Image 1 (cartoon, rainbow, N blue to C red):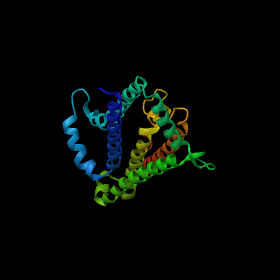
Image 2: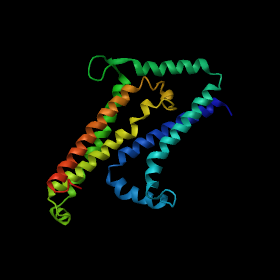
Image 3: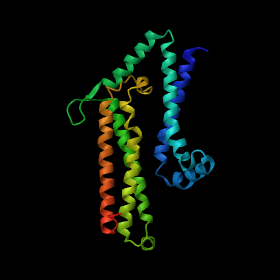
Image 4: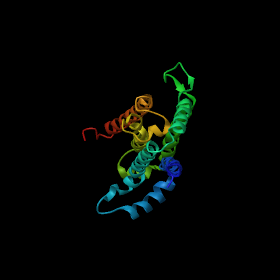
Length: 230
């Protein structure tokens, strides 16, 4: 079979999988996923071997591993093909797209147009996740708080801390991609681990901000409810 056809097939499959991963992150904070998809999938995939982690492994872990495996195959086929000239041109074109700067001065350093667009889309995903999670706070009623033996605002603070942490998980999911030296994904985009360190730094800062707020909210809640010693 022609390696060009196989590589084109893999490239399209990777695009579909990536879009699927993005869709799952978009759907994760919604009631549709939490109340319908998650329980349904959980019942079908829970097993003796993986137990309660089967759902997380299927939705969040397996796609990343599958993408890495397909990426390795894609690069391997490229090395064994006789398309070095065209691949070189494609690589140069991808690198040119990444490196053409639109911002030179500022806290983000030198940023290209495509980097800025991806950063804005990622921040939009974080905002969507956090806002969608926080909308669930309106379901907390005085009756529900009384059952837990706390005030409404205390229960809302506790849940808000949880939702901020869940939003931080989005950053964690992508945090180590930019610095994986043996990555089979970055070369597909014409990137190297050294050249992607700034993405790791951006994600690291966002992760630290979200989880710091997450921790502070929990500490405040534990202090006012008398549970900080636990």
